[in-house]
Image (cartoon, rainbow, N blue to C red; front, side, top):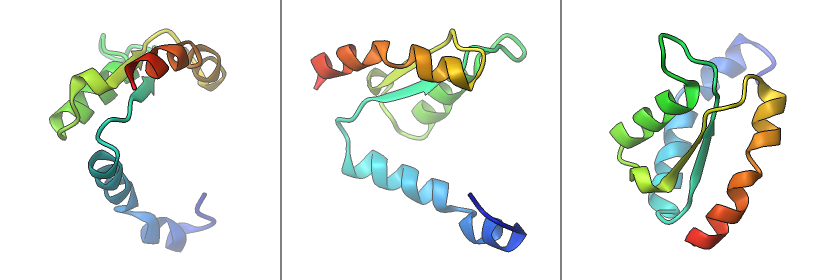
Amino acid sequence: MPKNEFELKRMEGYDEIIFEKAKDDYPNSIIVVTGGVPKNGVTEADNMTKWLVEHGVAESRILPENQSTDTVENALFTPRFWSSTARRT
């Protein structure tokens, strides 16, 4: 976590760099996106899925978890995907 505004500005752009590296270096990896609270009828997981697909990630690599309503539920509901990811690799 950035400690101040200077560190936050230094971090800008890193998420794109990390995303591109992960997308290119790990093309067979599975991505679990979480978040089930709809905003304008669309969940966070669905929004993240759409963004990833628009940025070149195959939809078959993305597993959306659309039931969680907070961070604790993100952590509780995500493990159910572990066995399905193991079968896909």
